[in-house]
Image (cartoon, rainbow, N blue to C red; front, side, top):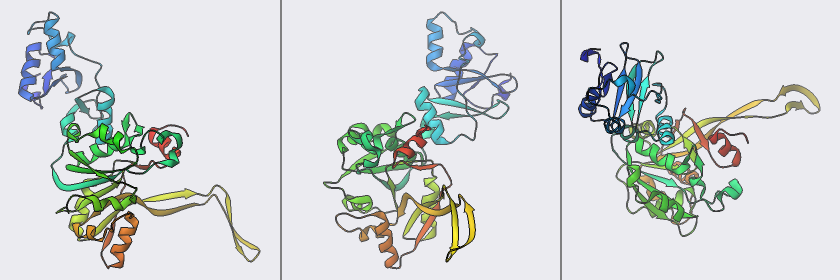
Length: 347
């Protein structure tokens, strides 16, 4: 394969040698080289560790790649979500995953630092994680609900990494019940690519009361999230929607459908006029994610408060509140059934 056919700096030809791998690692600035055939199809990969071990095992710089490559590699399609890629990296301890199209041809490379990072935003985020989670029963006796694991990762860690992926670097965690467990896990946030600070509630303050504990008023709109969400919502688009719309507050919403498990009967006096078997009804529900303009924080009362109550206060003062409909995956892990759904388990 000619060098012109190597479209990426971290790509190496299957016809190359171990020397070519080291040159590729240096040229690409990565810890992995992806070997491809004539068509651009992936044949195998080699990390910097693999290359060093090959030398220590007796290979020379002129040893052909064909017998040295790791051919049991993980690759993903371009459509796989960022969150799913991150989960896969976490589960398989990978720093990089090749991206292939439907023909198996190499089209890109997910790298851990790119998956975690985005252009930094000035926006802060507050995640409400002080609740007791009593509806999950014994699961939360010694573990705060946001620390319950889904796909090998605590719910709250998934949220923090999701925020970091949209460039949110300053995150406040409003803690109360078993807050020390949360602090011990997250620390100052450095290992998650952000700064984490704690709003310590001496008593439960509801879904909005902890906003009064912020050390200062933010200069730009603030994200507020419930801490029991498993979601891939596009928070960047939600922030952009808020900042371009001029509203005081933005509320994330989504459709919710409920099927009544019985036949329903419409009556006029005692006369049956209609029978509908297991009707399905839909409503628009609050998805537990908000963007607030800084001035709205002046409406937060001291003590206990709820986010719906704060939005009602905005409406009462004539402030504009808009809804941002999310289309991505979203589960509110409030009860065992939702936890099982998030884990892909049967209830």
